[in-house]
Amino acid sequence: MRLKDIIARLRLPFREEKELFSSLYDIMGFYPDNISYYKQALMHKSVGRRNEKGKPLNNERLEFLGDAMLDAAVGHIVYEHFPGKREGFLTNTRSKLVSRDTLGKLAEEMGLTRLILSSGHSNSHNSYMAGNAFEALVGAIYLDQGYAAVMRFLEKRILARVINIDKVAYKEVNFKSKLLEWSQKNRVRLEYRMQKQEKDKESGSPVFSFQVFMEGVAGETGKGFSKKEAQQLASEATLKRLKREPQFIDAIFAAKSERTKMEEEPTMAVPSTEQEQDFVIHQEQAYEAHEAHEPHEPYEPHRPHEAAEPADDEFDLSDITATPQEQSREDIIAAAEAAAFS
Image 1 (cartoon, rainbow, N blue to C red):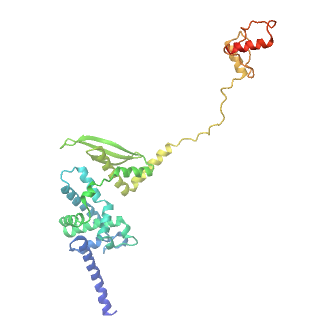
Image 2: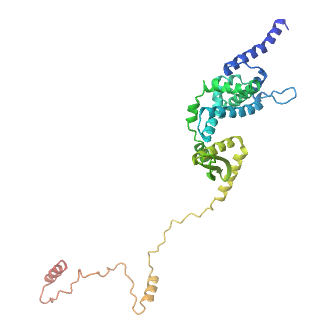
Image 3: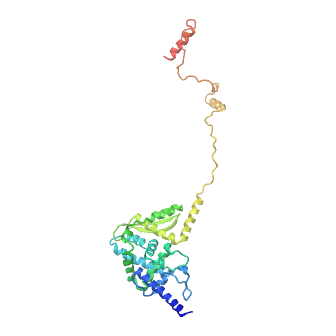
């Protein structure tokens, strides 16, 4: 191998590291002291690298640390930014700021996704990978520069440039509606049970505690100064649990399967289309009924083709007293008609 090629190969890692330093400076606003933390923060587990001891080398441990640091730092920032706001509001705002979707968008917006080392994944469209890398980056900053550096990074590079904290805070995210939508799509029974109602020791305001139940399986609990707030917090925690615990979902669908099995009705016979002729009175039935009520009178069956006797004297001719000898047939008919229509 020629000396020129050897020098080129030696320069390549240096050039790549120099580019990484420059890219991290554009993202964070300062140069790293220990670049190894940041290299590990950008290494997805799909790369499959191991250290000298044979242990996996990826960003999962830094992701764990960064998640904890984000909760603490963002909670601190929200607390200072919204003086006088209640715990529920502060918790809700912090949750929206550190949500996986928000962190994924931040990583994309800041150009962090193009620095992630992975194998067989699309960095630009994987919000989970990008969000995890952002958390790992925060963990690397904490180990490299300390908590104060994490606060400066979030305040000066994130909240001052990328995110409007006020818009995020007052944008309503209806976690209860999201959970209800999921349960309806999966035909899962959802209910909120109030576990406790007490008074806040400091303010004396009522505090409500609600727990989510799906198909009778207990979900998460939320506590707030209103029923709505408590149910929102319980819904949010339950949604997070649904994402991270497949066994929780399995328990819900097992309970649903058991319920639907118990609710199955036996198949009933197809109803007959023949109508019962209850309104037809047979001659034998009529005779028996007549004998039961009028045994002393002879039974005269009803003739369906014979005209019934008139109910009144509308056509009664008995008042015509003239005899045939005294009147002609035409006179008798004329007198009957006159009597009938008088």
